[in-house]
Image (cartoon, rainbow, N blue to C red; front, side, top):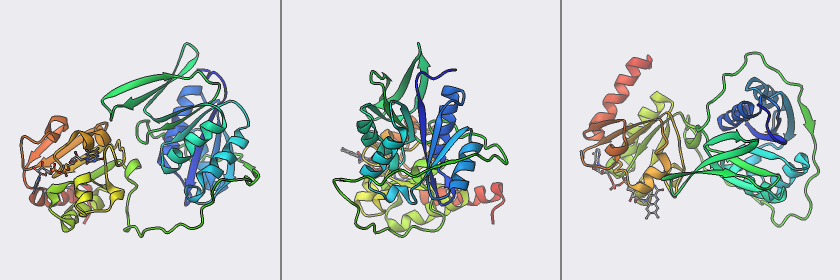
Length: 327
Ligand SMILES: Cc1cc2nc3c(=O)[nH]c(=O)nc-3n(C[C@H](O)[C@H](O)[C@H](O)COP(=O)(O)OP(=O)(O)OC[C@H]3O[C@@H](n4cnc5c(N)ncnc54)[C@H](O)[C@@H]3O)c2cc1C
């Protein structure tokens, strides 16, 4: 299938790995264009970034050295990217923190449209059509662009992760764009919070174990963290639990938290308020553990366990350990 116009993917490489959301974006671009797109990798390792982008299906790979790109001033990254793209194009990025920050600014530089959290992408009558959820996920809209350029950030896990071709390597063209002048602000300092060993990024996780007020306090997350370790899952939370200071706001899923789309979402002691559902309803399989059989989360769940999470979660952890052969 020919893509009408120029298609560009911006992929992020962090610590030697191209982010999963970026691999999915490369795959989506491949499906859309039959491989006819530019892939610009930003990160620190030309070799790792380039080879992984190629293994995911990118044929024309370019690299811009921007170590810790998400720590950069978004205004500066957007300017560097628009200078590199150099004209009308449809640009796809993952809806990561960086994508969400840079995407709209890049669209402004390109004088084009911006679509966030895109979950579907097709070409109809020679025009790209973008599908995205609106009204907290209660409706889907289909958007046709009227401008010559556009930037779309794709929701992580809404598109398949490609099979990585083994031993792929790319002829990567390294680009050295000019440092933008006349920025309106500069980042003076970033103070990073310590993360726990094995913490999995919530928005890209395949499995999420999430806890709400039912955990009963910050100590109540301990058994959920154990289950996360066994499953290689990320830890989520409801806003009520965040507001009660049970857990850090980084973990919040929902309308005013993060939007996630994992293969498996295990909701423990979460009632399933509409604002929570807004952030997780597109999960492929939802399991709810709740003492109240009338909790709204059971309307959404594919599997439900009526019971006390403090009893159920440790049993699940032990059973998963056996099944997965983990001691
Ligand atoms: C503008 C706005 C934005 C919002 N944004 C968000 C958002 O982004 N994310 C979000 O989550 N919420 C959001 N909310 C809040 C939302 O409306 C709910 O208040 C919140 O989701 C409830 O969290 P909860 O399910 O943890 O708590 P509750 O509603 O109190 O539910 C706790 C559940 O735990 C169960 N339970 C209790 N003990 C146990 C046990 N031992 N074992 C198993 N189950 C147990 C109970 O039966 C109950 O169903 C927002 C609200 C507003 C107004």
